Image 1: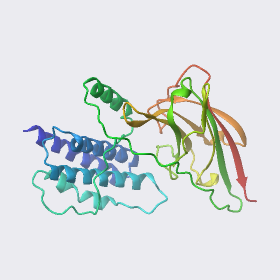
Image 2: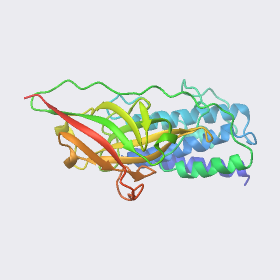
Image 3: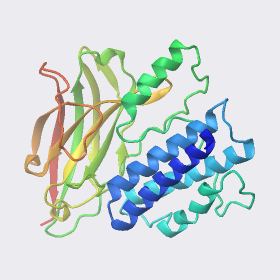
Length: 303
């Protein structure tokens, strides 16, 4: 069997695995599978030595878009589901027959733009690959697309007897704080299985860097009343920064707050090594030094 056919078989198996997880309600596993497959296809599209034709690459790029759209639908529980599982399943025959497929693509989508797609937990591997590429002189010349200046959401309307939480991200302590380029935070609220309970929010880029601190001084409005958060939920803070040599934004470390830590006033929380472990199973402290994320909580209760 040729290498191309082996690749197609592998993609098909991965696609089946993802859609199976999806139909069983194992959303975290489905998202992982979809994002990894999207990135593999994207790599093939970007490869100069690919065995696929330009037309086939265009189709692969569109499949990668659909996989990302389905991932996004699964990650955001509050929006209408944009891309349904039964729509995604229509792509199975296209993947299997990519070498002979010559019909119109079933959905009006554009191929994923040329950028790095980071699947969960893949960042370390990518950094290694990037370093190897650079060593071989094969670094990409693609410019990294500019980031939107934050995606913070306004406070929800108050409800009688319900509590809303505002978290001010004050600063984060890092030994190389001054070297971080365009640092920002991604804030998410996850259940015990790591599934999103709220829309994910990004802060704008940090206001200033000073000594061993990156200062944010920005308020995050948690998009659900505290009484409606399930037991075992946690609020995650991922510190991200841009790496110009590798042309991608990387997660440097993360922190999280559990429900019993929600109380008015200041709080400092520990920093953990990436990749972000939303299930909180294998946590490793970032450093032995006393460096923390500094927050201030305000509770709003409509009595």
